[in-house]
Every structure is written in structure tokens, then in C-alpha cells.
Image (cartoon, rainbow, N blue to C red):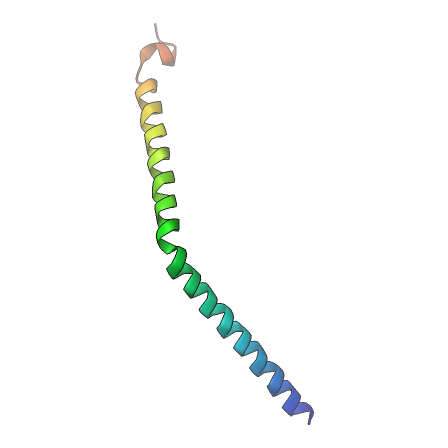
Length: 66
């Protein structure tokens, strides 16, 4: 009888894990495009900031060389 309850508990955990995995996959499919666009937008803004900073660093006055 005890072994049967352990097997039942294990089965319940497996079903819960499978349900959570299905929910995560569905959420990724639904929100995937939005998340990808957000990361791309953030990456572009960072790249633009770095490029602007590099242009400023090339200026000798910025570096303190006069």
C-alpha cells in the first residue's frame, strides 16, 4: 500500500512538471516575438550609445590632450 502511494505521488509530480512545461512553451510561442523585438531594440540602443561614446573618445579635447 505504501509503495502504491509513492508511485501515485511520483505520477502527480510528473504530470505537474509536464503541465508547467507545456505552459512555458505556449508562453514562449505567444510572447516570443515581443521578447525578441524588445531585446533587439535594447541591443540597438546600446550599440548607438557605444558608437556615440567612441566618437567622443576620438576627440583629443575629450581625452585631455591639448
